[in-house]
Image 1 (cartoon, rainbow, N blue to C red):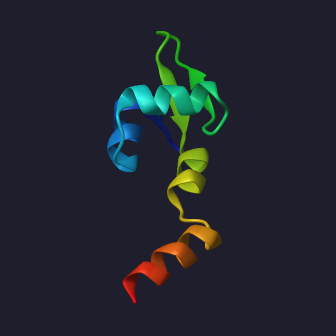
Image 2: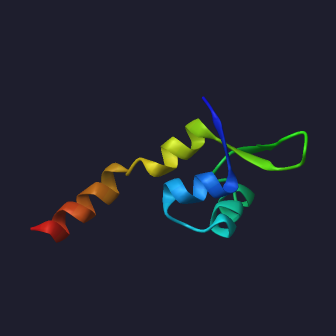
Length: 65
């Protein structure tokens, strides 16, 4: 699975790079450091977070009715 820079991950999630940084720091996203020191967010971790959970889908569906 590919890795993404903070800005790329933020754009995919529709949040700021600072928010993605906090998500990495609190363990919601996995990331590693590149040889240059940049954080690279794990693509599988990003996909898991971006996929809506069953309970969130249920809440969203109830608002659409």
